Image (spheres, rainbow, N blue to C red):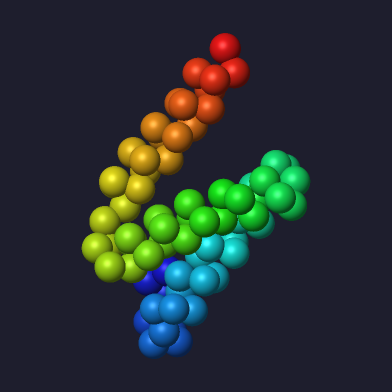
Length: 73
């Protein structure tokens, strides 16, 4: 996101491209699954664009993954 913002000068473009890339590598969930989690990635990208802090996003992603793992048991 940092590079896209610096190259284009557009935070909006950086957020949208980040969301698109992250959703695309979750296509193994299927199109609807990837689309449904794209909202979460959009929130994460907006948070990062404003705060420039990745650790809270990493922790949130880990919590979400743990929740999904627990639900499988």
